[in-house]
Amino acid sequence: MMAVQTTQGVSNASAINSLNGDILHSFPYQDDDQPSRRGWKPSMFVEEITEEYHCNLCHRVLCKPRVAECGCRFCYLCIANYLGDKDDDVGIPCPGKECEETLKRSDIQVDKFAKKHLQRQIVYCENKEHGCREELRLAKLDEHLQKCQFQAKECPNGCGQKLLPSEEDSHLGRDCPHRLVPCKYCDQRFMQKEIEDHSFGCKKLSSPCPNYCTSVRINPSRLQEHLEKECPEAEVSCVYESQGCDFKCRRKELDNHLRNNTEEHNRKFCEEFVKMRETVSDMHLRLDQLGDIASQAESASPELTGQVEKLSDMMKRLQLTMVQKFDKIGKLEKSSEHAAKKSDLQTQVSRIDTLASQATTLSNRVQKLEEKAGQGPRGRKGGASQQSLEQRVSTLENQISLHAMRLAEHDVRFQVHGTTSYNGCLVWKIKDYARRKRDADTGKTLSLYSQPFFTNRYGYKMCARVYLNGDGIGKDTHVSLFFVIMKGDYDALLSWPFRQKVTLMLLDQDSGRRHLSDSFRPDPTSSSFQRPTAEMNIASGCPLFVSQEVLSNSAYLKDDTIFLKIVVDISDLTPM
Image (cartoon, rainbow, N blue to C red; front, side, top):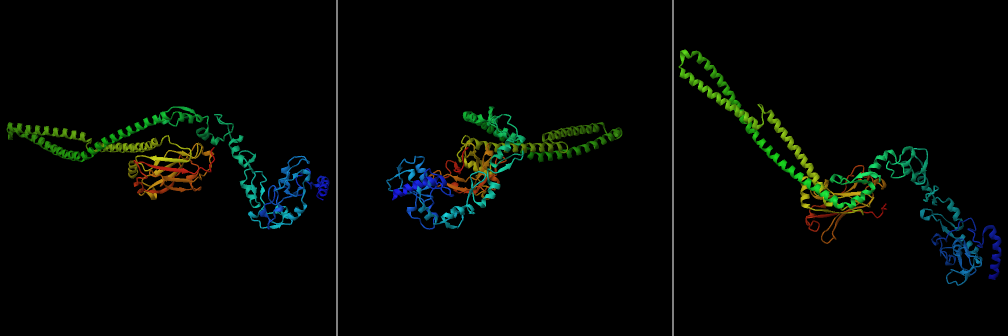
């Protein structure tokens, strides 16, 4: 009986296949209006479907059921892929469980019984997880999906995004990278993902790089920035130019120069560091000398002023006495013939000569005292000289303060030089802790900056900043530790704002198991994590990072040294 049915089925197949592909003689793509797919998920059915209606290949509920002569059932698409392009009469082993029969393409028929049975089953909408609560017969599912408000469809612009009807308007109008937008410089329209590249190279508002570094045209507003910061063909000076390295090369060759001349750069840096120390030492010596001179001048000025005033009074009295004596001489000369002897006259003249000599001596002494004190008749010259001296002392003090600050910065920079990392992790060794803490307490050096570190060779540029005597609410009680985003050479290629998790740590130098740490995720609205417009953004971190009392514990402070560690999570960053 089965042989008769098979023969009849194959006979009918030739006729039906030519009309609607109902029998898989040549494996037509479909036998009805429904698209082909792998079997249905069993969870779609409200009631459990028995195993006899499961495909022997995909093990799901049959979709477009096909049955072999041996009785094994398959989904249309599964058996079509299994048989491939083999000829009708070529047999291959049946994949059915515990079936040892051979399959031929000509033996496969539509399983109408299974099809009718399954079409009557109640199923959930495929979009149940998106919110659709519809339950209907399987036969009506495709019709329902055509109008289901929860059915996701591919973006008509071809970006590949699956969209729910409620998402379509916002996606097409705002989010789709394939949506067409007009160039603001010309009349052409481009896909959103291409418009930025076009704008920088738009022929109506662009020009080639004068160094011919790339075929892309550059907007004039960015040309200067491109030449100064990006152009690989631009001639640049070594970053150690201020330390005496006069090497110049193309920007793309600078990294090689820095790698190959590290020792020479370190030597030049050390030489400048020594010179700076000598300069500051000389400035301190000069300041001490000027301080002594100023102190002497301040202590001598009141005494000399008093002496000058006394001598001035004495001069006035002598001048008055001389006038009186000269008057008396005149009278004596007139009456000498009648009232006095010649010897008396000579005695008076001798006394006058003595007084005149004393007046001259006192006048000379006053002049010398005025010169010594640096004062004129009314102290104007002396006051001006003293004021000039005070101004010079003040100027030198300011210069020494600036040199001291610069020396402190160079001192830190020298210690951390050559330890730059490119893996988002910074280990910062701070030596001479006691001295640096005193400098922070006195206000000489309030904070220290670490060397820069990066998330990768072309990634975000960052550093740390520490206040050993605290900052803000942590002043005088805590060590304040902050994270700083710096202006980097590749910021134009990075995503902003900065969003990576940051962990700040004080390392345990004993067991290595009691590190003190604090973590935070950047606030994308904060200016601290936007693309830098200056050399550094505002620091962000922990003003109460660790109590200063903790550093009395030898586990964290050894050999007058502490170790700080900054870890930036780079797990979701893609290196360029």
